[in-house]
Image (cartoon, rainbow over all chains, first blue to last red):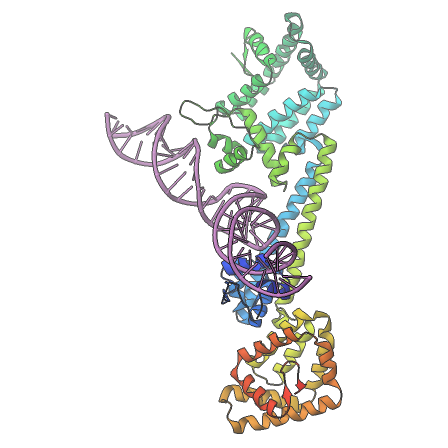
Length: 254
Length: 254
DNA sequence: GCTTGACCTTGACGCAGCGTCAACCCTGCA
DNA sequence: TGCAGGGTTGACGCTGCGTCAAGGTCAAGC
């Protein structure tokens, strides 16, 4: 007759595991001796080893029971099924590896590759990291709402960045962030913005934008994100309003 | 301002997940409206999406926090570490697949390949499945106690099975199992066993066996397993005792 | 003003497979 | 007789939420 630790020893498992198998009904509770100790026979060793063999092969404990009593045909079927699950789990983990390796390089954290490329262009142009991060967060929101439209949006953004005035605008904004926004510093920025928006409107781009971003609530949300992140945005919005423009992420004539 | 389900909707997660992130401190609890509802801003959407991006790449939630605030170097290091864990996990599952595929064919359930081959020879000789299973369980025990000695044991067993008298013995035992063990039926079986044991002893095999199986407690356990599994064993042991032999899995002269 | 249905709240169990205390009893040996 | 090293039950912990339960809230239609 064996004690629980002897049983566990023969089968190469922990005492705790044996008790767990009792709890879940995989291994029947044996009889007890006078002082309440469990006493096992050799049949328990055999059963325990068979349980472990299956468990170590990745069979969920919940299915071990049925497998121990299965006919060869049932057994083969169940094994095939479990193997399928194992394969699925492996594929899932491999997918995780793929994603995590892509995360390893920079902004692809949560933004599509096109956006990450655009952000890198901003950095290359000397625009501050704070500004880039603001832009990135804005695009995280955009990508959450209109993932399928990101490529076309980015084509436009890249085209804009080809215009040196746009780069200059970003740098001026950076300057305002760092040195504060006096009226004198604000004026040229607002002038530049209005100038470019007029051109943009003339090319019909703003109408296109209004078409693409038809979700007032969401646009309001993104705008509030911008205004929340820095008071400068509200100052600029006020100045632009004087010039007949409203909005921020989606500009429109008042 | 957003409700929890709107927030969850934008980020593509469940409401429950958002609350879970609050619980574990990944997402700060937002302010509440008059009736206790949580109200979120766009910044929460951004943070939530960044959390999900990492989580979906297999980053444990417990590490997401540190990764969100990490420098590129720290980030790369952490990612490498997580990738290592993912690889280990994948290898583990692949090992499971290997083992389970081996289980698919028959007795390799918990017995080494040599034993499985021996059992198949028994089947081929026409020995009943009940007998084979008894033998298998015995060898499960033996393999648990002396895994390294199984190959040599099996060489001997296979040699024995080459003797037609051994096959005949098994078949006679089968017969006793099915038709009951009258004295008349028992006699030839006992004669045959004694005959072969004498020869075996003459070749010095029994001494070798006693050498190999030096663990009286364990041998007693295996014997009790045999006697427990069928009353026939005890009957045979009684008859063998009359002829000067004791034991079962390890036979010795009285 | 009332019902209805969709949402919101907190609280708590469930899952897989044990690891790991805690608190206490039993046994064998010096 | 005292102590070390067994045994016993009970319960929390870990991962990442899913899923009730038992209510309060809000917007809409009657």
